[in-house]
Structure formats: C-alpha cells, structure tokens
Amino acid sequence: MAAMILSVSSSVPPIVGSVLDERDDGFWDGVVDWLRGTGITIGLIVVAALVLTKVVSFVAKRQAKKFSEQQRLASDPRTSTVGAHQQALIGALRWAINFSIVFMAIIWVLIELNLPSSAVVPLASVVGAGLGFGAQQIVGDVLSGMFILSERQFGVGDLVRVGPLMGVGWVEGHVEEMTLRVTKLRTFDGDLVTIANGELRQSVNASRDWARVLIKVPLGRDVDLDEVAARLDEVGAAMAVEPQWAPVVLEAPKVSGLDDLGADSVHMRVVGRTLPAQQWKVARELRRRIALALRAMDVRVQPSAEPNSLVDDDD
Image 1: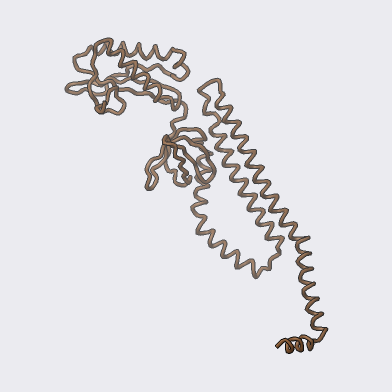
Image 2: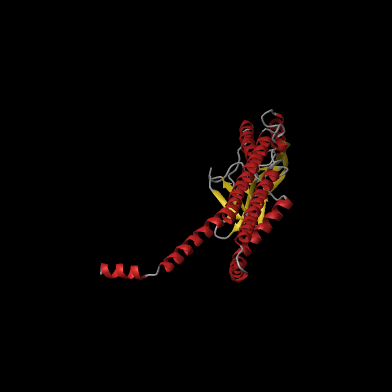
C-alpha cells in the first residue's frame, strides 16, 4: 500500500503541485491584504463605537449625579424636585445617542464589507420584516417616553403611582431611572420595577407643587364642637410655626367643617398643605398632637372605618 501511495505521488506532475501552492499563497495573501485594509477599518469602527457609548454613558451618569447632588443640597426644600426632569431627560438622551452610535456603526461596517446587492437585498428584507413585527411595541414605547418627557409628567426622584398594569395593577414608588423606552420604579418594599413607557396609561405624581394632609376626627355627638374646633386650629397653627415643621408645612392645618353626621358620631375634618411627599409624615405627627389635645380636654374619639381618621377600627 505504501509503495502504491509513493508511486501515485511520484506520478503527479510537478506543475500541478506548483499551481496548488500558488493558489494557497494567493488566498492567504488576499486574507492578509483584507485584514490590513478593510479589517483594520472595521475594527476601528467597532472600537470607536464602543468607546463613544462608554463616554456618553459616563458623561450622562456624571451629569445626573451632579443634578442629584444639587437637588439634595438645595437650601429651599420647595425646590427639591427641580432636577427631576433634567435627570429623566439625561437618561433619555443617553439611550438615544447610544442607539444612534450603534446604528451608524452597523451601517458603516456593511458599507466597508462591500456586499453585493444580490446578498444585501434578501438580508435586508428578512431583517426588515423581523424588525417590522418586533419593533412595533418598541416604537410605541419610545414615542410614549418622548411624550412623558415633553409633558413633564414625572422625573427621576418623583413619587408616582402608575397603572393599572396587566397582572400587577397599580404600582407606586420613586422613579430611579428613565429612558425613552422604559421607566424604573423603586417600590416601598425595595423592589425595582421596570415598566415599558407604552404601558404607562395613567400616572399620579405625588411630588409636584404641594400635597394635602387630611385627617378626620370622629367625635361623639355630645361634645362641644366649637370648643374642639378652636383647639384643633390652635394645634395646627402651633405646629406650622415650629422650626422642625415650618419648612415642610405650607398651610397650617385647620378645621374645614364636618364630613359626616351619624347617629352616634360626627366627623370633624382637619385639612392643611405640605411639601410634596411630606403629607404622611406631617399627618402622623398631627394625629399624635390631636390625640393629646383631645385627651387633655377629656374628649373621647369614636371608632371609625375611615382611612384618614384619627382612630381606626383595627386600633
């Protein structure tokens, strides 16, 4: 067998072997030439795109951190939400710029590859059909994000309630990040919820302008309503001028009237205004002070199922 192989190899004409060697050398020479020319160009395009996206992300995060720091150090608490829209806008611009960089890099690479039209047209048709079906929701999310930003519905740091979401319902939390496509909320339980902007049909912003503190005080029908109302007004006015509460209380809580007139009780309504997202803290302290004032007056509160009342049935 070895003798036959030797005899066959020896029978191959020398000119055929030289032709094969020349073909191999020509192929590898072409590969090397391509790598030195087009290959280097494509590599530079990819590296440049990666570097630009990293630079854009770094600058955007640094600017957002700057706005967050200014917001935290604001001397006037009423301006604590001034940077919310700017931070949301920065996140959206970062997403849009990085998407544009990647898209242009892909187009440039395809141009450098110099693909024939017979190969590009079918590929473009398949990719276009896939994007046409898959990008409908993405385009809707991006458009919704643009409207949210342009209308300033909410920004980074705002306390919002959005929904109703399919399978989840309403979601409440602080906006941690916002892009043109998604919004990320941190709930009170610590969960990070990512919601496509196209799903945000309704939103409630609790961090704009001012908030209302509302407390319903259930009283017996035999109490002196005028005396109790005057005392509750004094409690609210005293709280509004204290150094600890004056920066967050915009309007001193006072009695606005009676909410309900039942057979055994009446509900006195105490209303005030506070800074955004501060109404719960003010309401807790105001309930404590109202309870102490009524105890000093020897006035008993009645059990109530109202959510904002001084005493609930569960207590």
